[in-house]
Length: 382
Image 1 (cartoon, rainbow, N blue to C red):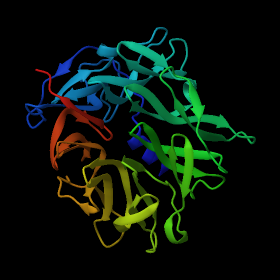
Image 2 (cartoon, rainbow, N blue to C red; image 1 turned 90 degrees about the vertical axis):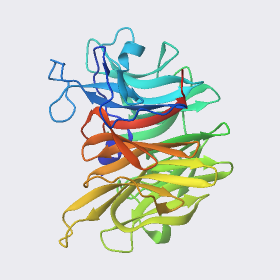
Image 3 (tube, helix red, strand yellow; image 1 turned 135 degrees about the vertical axis):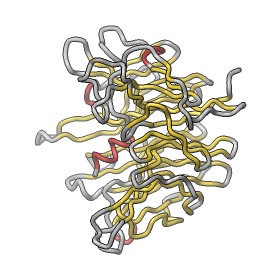
């Protein structure tokens, strides 16, 4: 299950070559007169001949962003770092109205790779090489910082993860770990110049985590309520003023079931799912007094408790919104709220989609699971 979380919240390292734009298909999002909506993800390319570069269903792909429904190959904008043979974008943010990218570049001579941030036409390498795990960008007053984990070996040769933050020059410092020696970092955000990250910390038992929130590198921990168990800790975080909101799944009082709860300043304020089949929150957003949580909820489809379907969810102030759900395989991976419009991306039935206030539109070429990853909304350029 841990691998499933990482596979969906972090983008898979993928190959991209060629120069193309794909016209918006019927039903794709065309934006509006005031906003440009960018979605980061993967588009299949039927013109590719290198069959070793595959995504889903045996089809080659490009790493792209869709701007108002039209896909553009990102590597054509960024190029490739000197001495490397590709650049696979994993994260995207806007700095002063311009897109910046974080991705993997593989060495020309071997299979090792490094992470690079691309901003204003320049690549900056992150310290850590192939040992960097699940990095995510944030904007701190117009400067990019990256948070994630670095792998290292413990005294017995096992791989453990330490949380770190990289500055604009690619140099990193280790965050507080308290009494713990292993962690996972799931989500990050910035509020009033303060940097927050959430995830879990643990020692020997991989199945028993402790909810972890870092503020400017300082760790605060929270166990699951009533002595229950959380494997994942906090999976999403968002901050408004002095209020820190986070979401945590943990074992329910119902056998073989999970609860999903919304926390505020270290206390549970809403139970989003009670006694569910692995409900998960992947993202959060705040607009005014409204708190949004995005993810999925699995439900049983028959009385045998074997077959389930996964339904995408956006909870607003603790209540599930009405959104397009598809036929039974979907989730919300990222969302943002702009002028009371809720934009969310994710998957419906093995197709990447963009929801706008709950209504979905397919993105051309976004075939397969985890095909869309991030939404950025900017004022339209005319």
